[in-house]
Length: 332
Ligand SMILES: [Zn+2]
Image 1 (cartoon, rainbow, N blue to C red):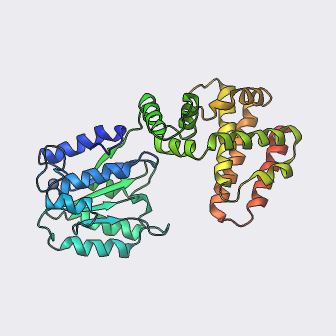
Image 2 (image 1 turned 60 degrees about the horizontal axis):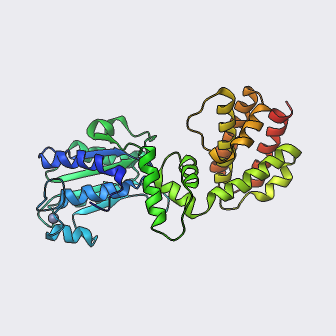
């Protein structure tokens, strides 16, 4: 259990408890966003369900099943996931359905972990549904989906649905502090707060921000954005976009614009760019609420276009978006 992140522990115990009481559901759907390390929660639950000799809510860690799980070679544990970034296809589901239709090789429980259920194609989702509608003894489905996922309503109706809550701020800060400090160099508390704000409170994403020095990179980039705003010079900003990270950079601009809009409207919560407050105050003073809203819309459109086109004409789309910012917002 020590391997579980602290924010996963309550949900783990609530679900494991249902198994300890002998009423564990055959299909458990947990809505959990990325950046929270939910894989560990699923891993711990799978171990608990597979264990031949559980100790209350915990797997014993000693039995043959536990050893097989620890070695990642349990023949009755199956992972269904997106391969090479593709959606989860119906063939993958059929293959697993056939296997779980057979008797468990270790005479115990069988677990199928569906990682990223929002990636199931419609046919695949229907194949999963068919299996969920005819539960087999000792067979458990654990499904993970993004909280914004639109799954078939019929899948929801067959599952026991749980929501993995976001960790509260103190817990996330504390965890980051401990994790970073067990590494080499000390990190300022201010940076931890900024990293968490940049990551919408998701601690593992915030850890990446700290480890990859993204606070500094964002600051540098937004400074260039500021110069672009002052000089109305999109061609000067273009070279600052990174070939690998341009969507993230658009997100940084969006965060800056969204915070400016919030400042304009007097909304203090969920600020993402807490480290550049003065720039935001000044920018916000010089724009109208309608202008800021329009700026957010323009950059959101750029973002969704960029995600759709897969690398072609990136520069052209960025240039088009930046030009619109000038004509429709800054000079309007
Ligand atoms: Zn065990």
